[in-house]
Every structure is written in C-alpha cells, then in structure tokens.
Image (cartoon, rainbow over all chains, first blue to last red; front, side, top):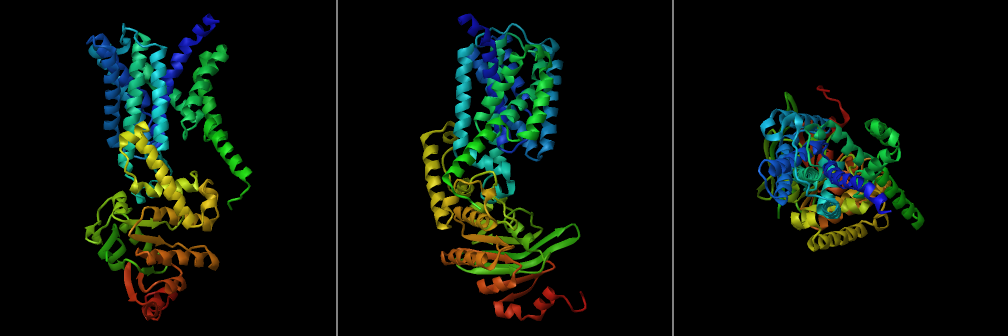
Length: 288
Length: 255
C-alpha cells in the first residue's frame, strides 16, 4: 500500500507546484489583466534560487526568498508598460516577455548555464514544504477573494469605467494583482528549483504558459476552487491514460477548445453558479 | 453650500467641436436639468465632469476643489457619482455585490489585512455587507439581493445602479438619461427617488431627452445644442424660448 502511494508522490509534488503557478495566472485574470507572464516570472524565481544555490552557495531559505522577491519585482516593472495596454495586446506583450526571458537566459551562459541549464542544485524541498506553500497560497487567494481587493478586482474585470466611476484606482489594483502574481510565480519557481536538481530554460517557455493557462480556463477563473480543480484534472488525466502521455499538449489544446465553447466559465464556476441558481429557485422567487 | 461649477468648458476632437464655453452651476439640494436634442453634447459634458474624457479647455470645480484634470477614481473621492445612459451593472455579480462595490470609497482596511485575511478585513466586509443591505432596503430591492444583477428587469436594474451610486455617499450625482425607455409608472417612482436625493442635500444634475420630465423635476434648466448652451433659466422660461423650440423642432434658415 505504501509503495502504491510512494509511486504517486512525484505526481503530488508536481500538482502542488503547478497549483501555485495556476494561482499566479488566476489572480491577474481575476483583476482583468490578460497577462500570460506567469511562465517567465516562475523562471525568474527558479533561476534566482538556482543561482543562489549553485553559484553563491546560499542557504535555501534565502534562495526561496530571493526568488519570490525577484518574481515580484519583475512583475511590478512589467506592470508599468502593461497598464497602457488592454486585452489581447497585453497577452502579446507578455508572450514576448517570455521569449525575451528564454533568449536572455540562453545567452547569459556564464550566469545561467545557457542552453545546458543549471545543474546540481541540492534537493532541499520535499512534499511537506510544497504542501505548506500550496496551502498558504490557497489561503491568500481565498482571503483576497473575500475582502475589498476581491471586490475591486471583480469590478475592474467586468467594467473598468464603472470601477473608476466608483473610486477604484485601476492602475493601483492591477499593479497589486501583478505583484501578487509575480510573488506566487517566483515562490513556486524557486521551490521547483530546490525540488528538481536541475533547471532548463525551455522549461519556462511557451509550453508552461499553455499548461498553466489551461488549468485556470478548465477549472474556472472566478473562484478559488477553479485552479484547484483544473490543475488536478489536467495532471491526473495523462496518468490515467498513459499511452496518451506523449500527446499531453494535444489533449490540453483540444480540451481548451471544448471547454471554451461549451463551458466558458470553467468547471468549478459552472457548478458553483448552478448550485447558486438552484438555491435561489428553491426559495421560490422570480426576480424578473 | 458646495456647488459643482463648470467654467468655459470646451472639448474638441481634432477640428470637431463637441462642446464650447459651457458655464454651468449645479447647487447642492436642488435638481438641475440639462437638456438638448440628440447629439447636442450632453453625454460629453458628463464624461468630462467624471474624468472619463480629457478636457480641452476650461475648468470644473467641486466646491473649492479643482477636478478638471483629475483621474476618474479621484473624482469619485471628491464626492461625485454618476449613473450611465445605458445601465452598466456588473451583470455576473449579485445585486448585493454590485452595491458593495459602490462602498469602495469607504473601505479603509490595509492592503496587508486584505491580503492575509486579517480580522480587520473580515470586520470591514461584514460592515459593508450590512450597509449595502440597508441601501437595498431603502430602494426596495431586498428580495433581489442574491440574484445576479443581469437577470433583473430594466426598471430594477436602474434602481440597483442608483443604489450603487448612492453607496459612495456623493455630494453630487449625475444622472445620464435615467428614465430612457421607461413607462410613466416607472419614471414616477424614480422621480420620487431623485427628489429624495435633493431633499437629502445632494446636488442632482439630471441629463434628459424627455423635456416634460425635466420641466416637472427641475428648478433650473440648461439647454445644450451643437455643444453650446443656447438657453437657461426656469422651466417656463426655457420651454417658451424660441431658440429652444427651434433647436428641438427644427426650422429656421440654418436647418
């Protein structure tokens, strides 16, 4: 029995790390920013931590802290030009940001190890630490959702003009969402570095972008449950159908298209809305 | 008494003049009307006052505060709220949540408290929920609190928008064609609400198409045509002004 569980530990670890990244993607979408920068921000966190460990020989706690701070700082800087863009232009700009990150990483070989990546990072992070981090991230996202920030994010996402007319500063709130997204990406990127022994620049490219975006779109964009469910499904699915594992990206792509068409709110949000509508119906009042 | 003052307000889009040298006073405790035919530039004025559109020339003051070039969210904090010509609710959100967003101006808990779900943030949410529920009761919307705002009837959506604007506790409220598309019963109900605003000491600027409604509601009316004020005064004076009649009905040589 314990052998059976041990066999699934790597999968659980992957889930916990990707859940953090999914929240990083989730929080910007929630605030109405169409940013796809999470992959690169995670890369910045991971490489910061990796360099701290391999080149500077620092303590892992410092490495994780530095990764988080660097992810957040990069996100704040990135939010300044992005504040002038909207919608699909933000998406394009952030995809370009990912390409810049990957390219610079390959060119900066003396620091980052270039295309060969960064090797020999001591493995200091296990399932326990990942679980604590994932639970903490879930808690913060949940707290944000319940408080004034969540309300402001909702207003901005749905109608910027209305939000501004009610006194909500769009620039300030979107920068805050960005900072939080960067900190989460940096943190879980850094944890990934201490968990995986080695880093490879392409690990944080377009592939990761699609993966993380899929978690949020499939699970749902407007409740904390969304990323939790979406990440679980997309990580378990290829394991259930091992022979399809090679086609993981094909499956993700097809699933995205199906979900966007037939369940545009994502699984968790659709279920939540249905439950809510059912409860109102049972109360027996018709609003119209 | 504070006053919303527009002085020589102008807006040009390239060579096109959307408004020119508009001077208006909106006093507190009264309903002031702004009428004009379609395309006269009424909404342009509202958009300039609320910071949604940059001003080309002139000034806007709330009391002694210059808000001419202030960004939209600061104008709300200076005590100005608006409703939109085409109702703009957050249709996915519940009626209660819509009104709670209007309370944003009064939220004080720190960012750290909000991020980490500290007791201060939870207390604030509870307090804001209570205030929003009280407003809903005032507007007769209590039983809709949990429904998605997008599913309500037109008249009720209008009321939700009013409640949201009032949640900010503004000194001035700009109503952009609030009774468009409503029948007499519905517009009478809103008329009572508007009179209530004025009775509570708030300055109301009523922008309307419907001349009859404005004449009934306002003590002072401004008439806009082609971006310029062409007449102002009491309803009686304005409605009998030949310039106004020409603007509304056409005729004259320049038509």
